[in-house]
Image 1 (cartoon, helix red, strand yellow):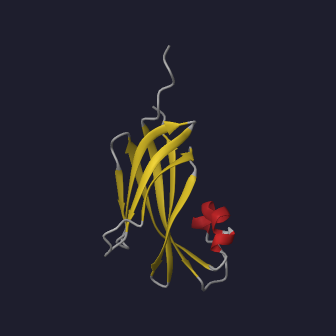
Image 2 (tube, rainbow, N blue to C red):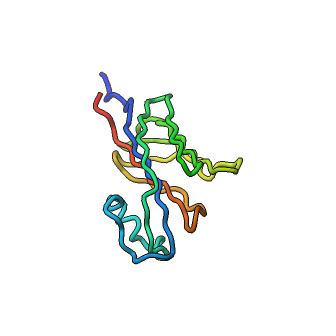
Length: 138
């Protein structure tokens, strides 16, 4: 008996966000999709939010994608498959001027789920990367 085909490809959006201690706490319209995360206690110290850059990525099994940002950060994403209806991915985040990866991890997430990684000093704040991937119809 045939089993359900495993996910073959996903479309991802990687968003670079700068968070700062200074600001009025307003989340701009282009970051409203992150409001729930940015209102979390872990972001309580930050009052300024700015979208730096958004990169689309298409991933296929065994075909990783690389998002290279103007800030010098690079995010390599790999689609590992699917388990328990969650997408299995690998994220590798490299910072300019650093040899070791800031993030190098496998994770499982709901289809179109959102993962925030980073928290690295950048400009006058910290930079985070929001990774959102969804299945592509085959």
